[in-house]
Length: 419
Image (tube, rainbow, N blue to C red; front, side, top):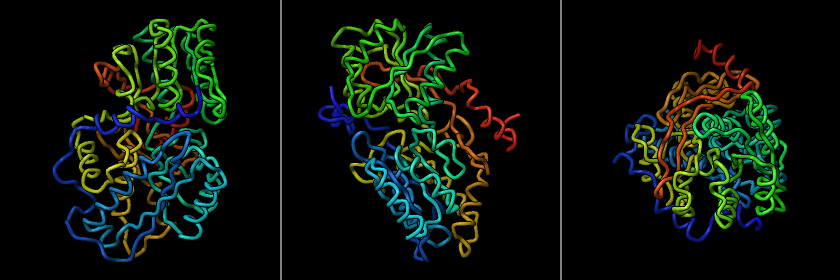
């Protein structure tokens, strides 16, 4: 199998619109919610996504763009509209540096919101710090994103979500030895699978990392390697496309019952049920970072309403989109507490760092930023199982145990969010 498995096409792509979240509220609520179009001096905000093979991370910027349009139709930031400029780094490090420089230095954005990119976070972390600009990201998947003073993401990323999946697998499925299958990217698959191994060891269990070269994917070989290692559980630490490829290989060899199958959030995607079949009923468990797409909380309903009213027809409505909505909402709320005449990068950076104790039905815990050298406010999730063409929740919000979170928990104590 080859890199085409990193994207979704055919029936799976068509399923994107066949399994959309439940309809939102009739009218979206945004910002001042006064129905008056903002006409003052624009506040320039940027966003960077990675949308090219091997993956589409545009959901966060799509949702942020829709939310900002809604805000601009509802008074803006006390009369000032948000001018939102989105760039696609196309998974190209050189281009990632160029578009960040364009936004931060040339356009002078006050902040970046909704960012989703593997490449940009690693390439531009120093730039953000040097230029004193904050990125309220929505789709992070590498260590650089969570271990940086100027980046905070609403999504969990692979480390907490993967450990959350393993915690469930140990407690509910009897896992003793798990294979962590990921890409051989040090700050992605290597980083996450290494912490999976530490977690499994702390629980008296075993873990084996099976890392693939993302430029030469051989899914048959990695599946056979899992068989040879004698593991009882497979953790699919992969984007949805190659994860589905592994599941296809297993189905072709009737290997479903050879392992327990778990995954972090990427497999919780509107396209996935259409790509699976009855073969995987009650056999595939996924940890999800935000609320279910069809949940009835006010923010989830409003996310749908905003996307219905202000999004494009082809905008993704995935976890990254939910995350982009939350990032944009909390960003706007921070700006609305400021003097609109004195908004600049320095004051916005200070306002973002002052965010603490924000809540949303989309999240399992409080959202905060703070003036710290790393950020991971979202580290508790839910567990779902694939069943009859949909995902059903089998465990509500629960947190993980990992020494990786020790500095994060200390931050929460300092902010008074925990005892």
